[in-house]
Length: 117
Image (cartoon, rainbow, N blue to C red; front, top):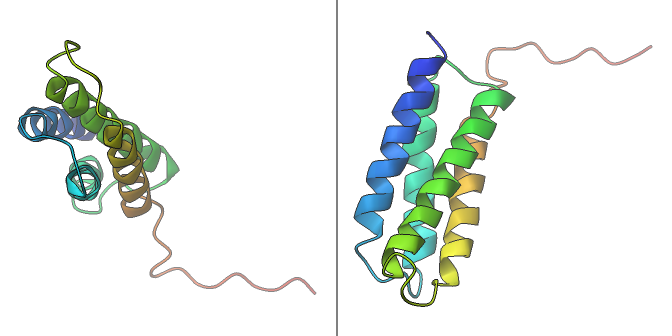
């Protein structure tokens, strides 16, 4: 249960972000900026303020953030009636990179590794 709740929270944030961003035309720098912001929000929801960090939550956050931006692109295209905005793919990549970087394992507070002798 301690790991399911952050994933559900991240999915809810990604879905809400997709619904909001999908109402705008994904042109210019908007998809990249929306991807960065959505990646930050989803990664914070998945990591729940730093309680769950590592490669697994980083991957989960990256997938959820990218899926949110791709869903926003589908909404922007009139739910498949018009051409899919090509910059939505760039926004999804920005969302995945931002979320994955933000939720990665933290090295703060760990002792440096000892060199081999």
